Amino acid sequence: LDAESADRRKKYVHLVFQSTKPVRFEDYRQGLWFDNVLYPILDEQKKVSMVAIIARDITDRKENEQSQQILNTLSHRLNETVDLQKGLELCTQAAIDASSMDCGGIYLLDSNENVLKLRHYKNLSQAFVQAKGSFNTGTPQYSMVMQGKPIYSRYNDIITQRSNPEKEEKL
Image 1 (cartoon, rainbow, N blue to C red):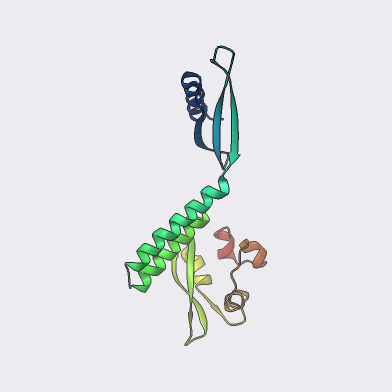
Image 2: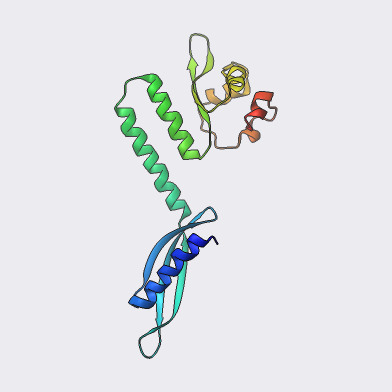
């Protein structure tokens, strides 16, 4: 436990001792969010002798709240623009924020050429963009997109043979 978190918790415990009332606070540690309630345990003289602490993991709730906030922000910003490139930029950033990844991109189908083309990206190397900037029919990536089903998986589980640009991007 880092010193800052320990100091913050000590203040809550001291508050329970001083007020003789329960205290509730949220805490983040080791990648998890917790809802903490500190209850005073009183002795015969009605003074706090101990503090009972109940911590409940609320990580899913916090992540859902963050996702909802990202979606709300994206919705408002998309309503304010009619520019496709700006819309793609907003969607890319929202996807990166929601996934906690450091890079991403959006492919669109060029129906004239029947090719998926990378239309907007952020933090991808030029080598990756040149190598993976489009996918023709017959490629696994094209086939997955054309099935029209969302895929929630790690890239390595979907594409088993990676090119050098993919390896360099650590995909």
